[in-house]
Image: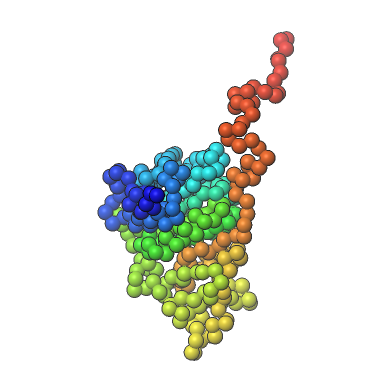
Length: 336
Ligand SMILES: Cc1ncc(C[n+]2csc(CCOP(=O)(O)OP(=O)(O)O)c2C)c(N)n1
Ligand code: SF4
Ligand SMILES: [Mg+2]
């Protein structure tokens, strides 16, 4: 019997070309460990990316990989999954790749529920092209393309995913390896398009943009780790989220002595899209940042399953593409 693969077995001999201190390194480690933990078979695993620093990912994972065209990783992944549904397909994209040029492609992979894991590394900047502002950059972000500060309202990747009809939406942080690993495993276990936003520090062009909730000393107060069936508590249980039916909004409440009883605090229901919307819309710094599996719809058929239902499987095809193209509506134009 061969020994199970370890995280190191998923590392390649390629020189990793990210800047020292880039958050991408930690994500790479977390993904490699996840692959080992889930017993992934490198011969049946494919990483597909677009263009960007984050999109260099497939070079560094010992599996099959495609470094494709800017924004088109979801389209390649959809084709791959349709042609060979047995492959385990991961998409790696950035906030620019996935939400600027590739917003359209991402939307369709999510709404179709193609059974792939989409990891969107959000550093709120175009790293590879030297720091232009991106669709997730905050208002006021100064960059070579917004020297006076960006005036564009940023898009929330997870709210975009929810609006697109994604059935699994989660969030993690580059440096919280344990939590990120658990989130990636949950994404992998989901049958359908699993969207994971990973807050990733670009130390060169947008350093510490997430530090207000990722720094160790503020994390307890500024993050809420949501878990299905568990009360929405944070700050070591001293605070929680409750629903105000008058305003139809969430509120932060102190829990226990001098505060509200814990029974007032909402219990996380990951199958509730309205709650997902509320958790993803919480403004900072008044509210904590929601992390973990925020939305997981009850079972829905993956796209490729529906596609192949009642069709001949690849390898059992009845004819050739060329014949199909030449068949059917053919007519001859009469002279005169
Ligand atoms: C068609 C096309 N347009 C523009 C570019 C330039 N370009 C390369 S990567 C990139 C953005 C990358 O940003 P992001 O996806 O956030 O990745 P990061 O580098 O931050 O990981 C752009 C605009 C390109 N390569 N191809
Ligand atoms: S530019 Fe930013 S995102 Fe790109 S490798 Fe360097 S630190 Fe990482
Ligand atoms: Mg980016």
